[in-house]
Image (cartoon, rainbow, N blue to C red; front, side, top):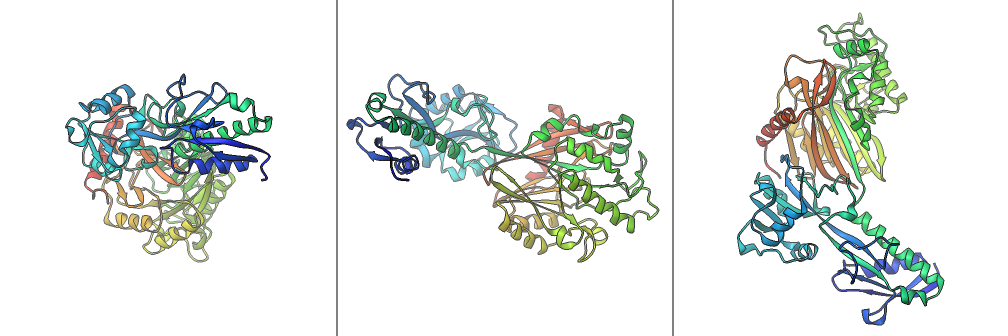
Length: 551
């Protein structure tokens, strides 16, 4: 664009993020304005500084509320070990530790700080921080080593820039503001490195009106740019355990005359996610006759059961399971022929009609192995599903319908292909040994193949009990989430499960947490009370600690 305003005199004080001046020039050109760099003594129209100008509050003012606009270019987030139950810290407590180094907040034994960003952190705090050799609670480490240090120190806490947070740690709120999940006003966040964009209104008033308008636009563009860079909009994914709306769940739905009833207690949170994923371990079809609350392994539910899934906001379901072609009371028996194919194809069609992407199954092997891509905030998420339990008789063939087989070689090939079409690949596996918390060696090997080929998340089901998690280089594995909607009330463990919450900033997985559930009345999951939730997470933690540490 040919400049129509300017030149605007710009002063960028030393210490500002690299590229700030070039960014301002680029935005100026976008607005049709020449930008000229000057010294602060040359009466600049716009000054970008690291210190608040006189009479400006600690965090600045709004663009239209005063002469200076505060713009954060780095946020600092307290973190805890992955399995910590701590939710957040008060800034007053954290500040005391940072400035005195005496005791760590929240009863922690130590506070790990990034030695390679010490100057930036001290600038954000506004004071010097005790040196590494001063003793006390503060420990300095390279930022790349803090996650591993926390993994080996259950009593430790850390502080990392938001852009360095990943799924190996538990991010905490600060004064109730959660930057990782996007909860609370980021402009009120107490620990950040900020720039102040100060307009000299006396100088601007003597400039042409076109320059006055352009400088307001430049300040707004710079503010929006830094906000998008340092605090991207989170993408929140929720994934459930096994969903089986058959048998006693079906009977309960009939009794309540409501096929949404199993999801009433959890639907609000599930449908609030950007992507909601489930594991369907049944067929949803009217091809056979559903069996009520009696012992059977033929898990067919009527097509109306999809009402609950749409009510709960599911976006993706894997249909790859050992019950994918079940026909209920069909005369074809437990391994149905024509009825099974019909039930399976009707399940796929019913899900498609409801707007739910089905993965892990198809009208032939190629279709069963293909992924489905959902785009959220410009990020493409590919989902793949596989079954290792019953693919020998429910699996797809070159020309026949069925599920995708979970096999070495094939899995890596599919993930690599999906990675070419998407930014994030998520694999949903039906695998493992029932009612055990520890994954098999085969599960662990398959997980490594998936992550090695480019998967960011591997989420498993089928054991009907929660299993361990594992941190691999480049990806996270949750081997089983337990039951979500099912009638197995013969043990406490089969009435329990977790919903996995994964948070992405762009393509980067920044957080994984688990929300425990308890299944009531043989069908309805509700969020577990804290003591029970602690027990469920404790089983997962215990099983996980028996696996290798961080790579």
